[in-house]
Image (cartoon, rainbow, N blue to C red; front, top):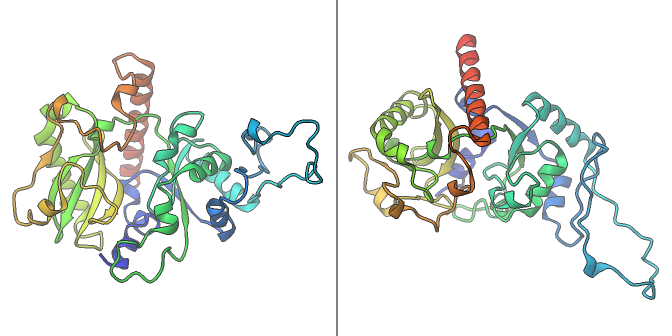
Length: 330
């Protein structure tokens, strides 16, 4: 794999070309001071001070082990570490979040802090201010890929990091159906495999709609991706709406840190010229619990009439309304 292949998969590079076919996103180039803050683990975990939100969460989590009793007094007792401050960045983020409806999910050039969702008060990636974003980013191990290891798999590696880091703020949809996200594998500019993205759960609906979904994604690839994305070997994720429209979610490198999920890379390499196949978890016995890629389906009450079901329907309706507005503009 070459450095150029990795760079092509950065969201700031592919988003402008697929803007009408993906989730609405605002991009911000991050100052080096903020990158240094994310990487600095030598100081206490301080969240940025806010210039716009008087009710921002506390800057430091209470730790009883750090307390001193009345007889342990030192000269530094009255010294307090000043919280970091990024006023210009915060104001830009605030404007973008408002433009995107009040909630976003953040990611860097390639990765989102999915592994840190547990630390959020909402237990997900929804953010409404800079402090929410900083909490997720500082708590995420997966973001080290972007910050320090982006080019580790490149044969022509000359740097451990990109020239610039970008914050992508993507419109937050409270709950889209996890069973309708799929990973697509492209080899030599040919779609050689598709599989469900969330492989830790069996979704009965996919069994009945397998052929239709495969046809939709294949047609979407031919019409919208094949001649637009610059690489010949890559992976992209899509979401299929209830109206059977396909949306791009992300682009990833072929091999490297990208998971092949229900395939192996050796198998995918040999599928060029073969018949396209969509792989799904066919039964509960076929789940792959070792490949946790999102919140397990069992954690969510998706039954008809449940609160989450109502939220999901509202999110789907909003997604479709955006599609209609885009069609009118075009």
